[in-house]
Image 1 (cartoon, rainbow over the protein chains, first blue to last red):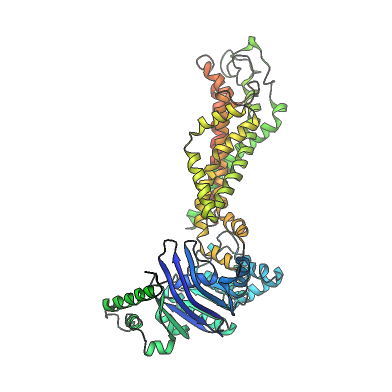
Image 2: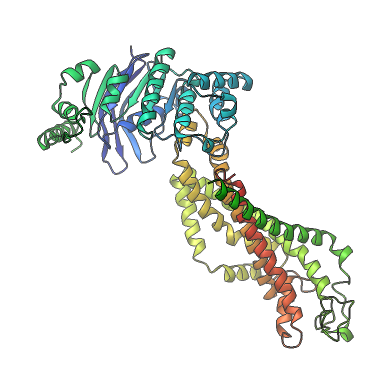
Length: 289
Length: 283
């Protein structure tokens, strides 16, 4: 049984516009699941739904989010908070807004250890130091006493990664963790996340729009279009023989780095029309008009 | 880069020291007024009426800044007037801040119906002309120190609520708040530990501005004779009295006016200086 099991998750905006359509996906323990799609496809919304931080305007109308067998959506809010806090963490997209600018870095890492797991402050601090060293931050002591603005974007992302792993969560949602960084740093951060994931045996839901990233870190993959999972497959299968026409077109649209002169291939109009028709058909079946 | 930073710091420093210096002086004066005032501020001497300040010919050097039309010492009255001005500034400033910032923080972070109620309340409140509103309010609840403070709080809480709400909304959308939520922190904890520290610089600036405004409002209310009893010296009351005799005795109007001006200016400059000091990026 997978650690995270999402079944038929459906969510709409307050005006009734569907955001997620019958999304089902699972992440086994210590597995890395990629979640790809164009912007607005609902990738981040799935992550937010799992972590219970959906915007106020989005409402879950149907479905289950099972964490270790327990349906989070059926729990009372306080209990849900506690469960999520104990077993999940987030590696956010933008390291510049993900640390509180008016608090020192150290307490921001140790807070959850002290608050949720009930560690003593000194134990938590020792743990934070070890983790910062593990993500290759020089002088962890000094960094913990720093304010976020004193550190570079790459440093902050490392801190956020360390912080995500601090409480040894079972599942981490990485929401485009490399998008806000420049390319040279991206590669290091990606390697770091993959390494940490392997060492700690954490299940990882990796939200991204970069298929190159998927091929490097993920084992399984869900392709999302308009809030609907159009393909759920293992990564090797996807790159050798994608099943769905949209996935094929998406893969074909990946820029070829070896040939700078080659023009970019857009996803063909016909494929878009076809996948839209598929979404509409699913909506009709579900009686959503 | 380094130069720009140190320059900002130096200028902020000077501004901070000058304004803080004036305000500290004022606080000392207010505390020690009975000891340092050369005369009894209430004592009338009709034979010594409208004496000019010491450097003008015909002055009595024991009345440094001259006397008003009833022969009361202008300097002593200004010194005693500082007591009321500062009490009103501090108490009503802090109370306004507390009420306004709390409501603003709640509206901005909790959103939903809390925000709807508070925002509509702000809209309705802002439709009243503030000075008229305060005069009306005092006329209804009667003059007195408590009434002035209450009037200022009731009128001005929206100033804090609006700004703090907007800031709290912006901060609430940041990823660090989402992280805190995932980490199991409750709404109150997020408001107080995550959002409040980031809104605090703005609150401090507003607070000092509000103190300046409170001094002005008190002066306005004294001017229209709705402050505390007319015997007690207030800057606004002095300005009102001085207005009547501006052509014969300008000093009765001008000295309290200058004091008021520097006090209000110091409050606003103190706020600006503190903001630069508080800003985590400039610090």
